Structures are given as C-alpha cells and as structure tokens.
Image (cartoon, rainbow, N blue to C red; front, top):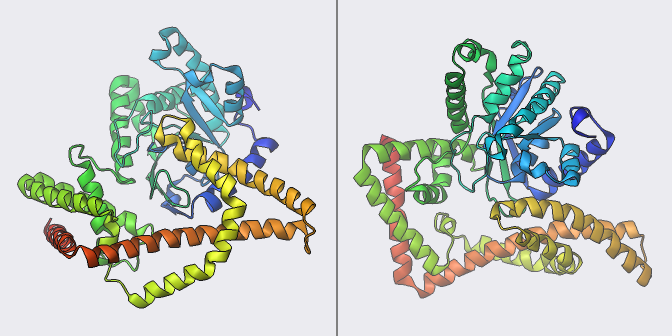
Length: 452
C-alpha cells in the first residue's frame, strides 16, 4: 500500500488497525469519552481538524474512534528517507511541502492535492492538524493556513463540487504522559467550504483568513482553551482546586466525563470574565493561589487531596485492608510484568521532546507485553511441569497485570492519604495555613462564579 493507492483499504493495514486500536482504547486508556459525535457528517467529503497537544497520540485518538478510514497530512521533510516514507504511506500519511522546504518544492503539493481529492471522494476522512505543531498546554495556538489551502485548492480543481466539510475536534487528556488516564473527544459543528466559495473566488487571502478565524473560534469552543499566557498556571491550579466542587454545584451527579469537561469550560469562561473586569481582584486571587500551591509543594502534598471531603477512617482502613489482600496478586504481577513495564517506562528517554512520551510508551508497550508474555510462557512451561495448560498461565499473566495495576494505583492513593494525615498531625500550624488558604480560594471562587 503506497502513496498512489493510499485511499484504498488493505488487509495488513486493517489487521494492524484492529490490534493497535484495542491496545489504545482498552489497555492504554482507562476511559475514552466521546461527545457530539452526531456532528460528524454521515457521508460526503470531510476534513477533521483537531487541536494538537500530544504528538502521535492526537492522531491515534481520532484513528481509533472515528469509523471512517482516515488519511493524515504531515510535513514533507519526514519523508526524505525512502524506507521511512514507505512506512508513512502504509500508515496513510501524505506529505505536504512548505515554503521552508524550498519554493520549488511547492509544485510537489499538486500530487498531494490530487490524492486528497481521491481520499475525500472515496468517503475517507482527511486529518489536518491546523496548529502545525504540538505543545503541552491546554491552549489553542495560532492556526496555520495549510488546512484552508488544501481544502480550497482541492475544491477548486473539482469546480467546488465536493462540498467539503471541516469538522473541528477538541482533544483533552487527564494527563499527557501517564498510562491508564482519561481521554475526551469533542466534535464541533462542521464548517462548509462552499460557504466561502464566493469570497475565495473574489479575494483568496481574505477567504483564507476568514475560514482560519472561524475554525479557530470553533476549536476554542470544543476544547479546554486557556487564553491567558501570563496566568496560565493559575488557571490550571483553579481547575485542580475547584473543578470537582463546581461540577457538583452545577447539578451534575458526578465528576466523570463529560460532566467535568463541561463544568471546566464554564469555569474558565467565568474566571476570564473576572480577570478582564477586575484585574486587581484577580491578582489577589492569583497571589493566594500561588501561596497555597507553594505550601502544598513544600509539604509534598497533592493539591487535589486538600480539596476532598474530610477523611472517613473506616473507608481508609477498608482500602488499606483491601490492598493487603491484593498484595500477593500484586507481587505475582510485579514478577511477571516488571521487565516489559520497566522497558515501557524507559522508552520515552530515547527522545528529547517530552510530548513523545506517550507515543513511545504505547508503541513499546504494544510490542513488549505480548512478546514478553509469549517468551515467558514458553520458558516457564518448558522448565517447569505445570499442572495446567500454557493458556491458563497466559491468562493469569493478563489478569494479574490488571489487578496489579489497580493495586498499584490504590497504593499510590493510600500513600497520599497517609502522607496527608501525618502532615496534619505533625505540622498543625502549616496545615492550618493551607486549610485557611484553601477556604479563601474556594470562597473567592464561589463568589466569582455566582456573580460573573
């Protein structure tokens, strides 16, 4: 499967898609929430334009959660090596040349535009990341015009008969780097290229700017978009301190997705309005939050743990007992899974860009765990005379891994709980200060969201 038939389906690609998709959706992430999926057109030509925060993971989030076969567009310089290019074409990625690649190279884009037309006509989805590069922040950056040029030029070569729709997608991660975190996809209202036809034929630069502005607004609406650069960390801290409480205050039954996401969108909007209306008041809130966060770091406490309701001693003891009961399974899992787990955790150190952490983890874990299970099973079943079949042993490895991961997370959570209790008992003055600051922040935000 090469560039010339990239829009066609292949057995090898479909098989790989199923295996990696299972690993991504079931194993790597513990929860994937999709909202407003009805905004995806059922047929016709569609360009998907997500925000770009987490390297390859952004592409995989779409690839395994949209039913259409997707073809991606990436910068041309990564196609220079022929072997690498062959792999990229197999993965259904097309090159797009930029001015920085040399003015003469722009003529090569004609072939890409022709292929995008084949992709769109065939009912496949074309994916273009309009920010151009990734960044680890919940903020929409300035969009490039590449998506608009591809859409307009593809339409123009087909007399504007394709009726291309552009679908903005907000991608949100509970954590960029860790395994078994949460992923959310939010699909926005499609933007029709035909609505810009007259403007494009009259004034192309103006049409490019107009659709870029419209897509930027649409993307901002479907993602967590913290516009403040100066106080970005303060907004993030507000999310961590107050989001769960605010979600419940709004009447949602729990703080699961998409409830938390929808509440945070409202919260950020209200805080932005407060910052614009009362800069001095916001500055006071900023300083209080800064003092509180500094105190939690000094005490080595998570911000979130101070926002919870008072501890229930019975529940704490029940969790501790549960962990002790799971300890034998945890140790069994640790022995069986330590090598592939450690290799997976160390994989991201091969790259300089931290945003490729998850990208490397998912690829390495997908390769290492099944391979290690097979090798480990072959060795143990040949060395030891097991009273049961090899398939039972593989099953025990997988089950132990799931239980072991649960026990591992429970151990970390209990560690935070006990650290908090010891800190509270031994550092009463510092604890009282943190509690007072937390109450000040909460009361300030209560007043802010009720009046703004």
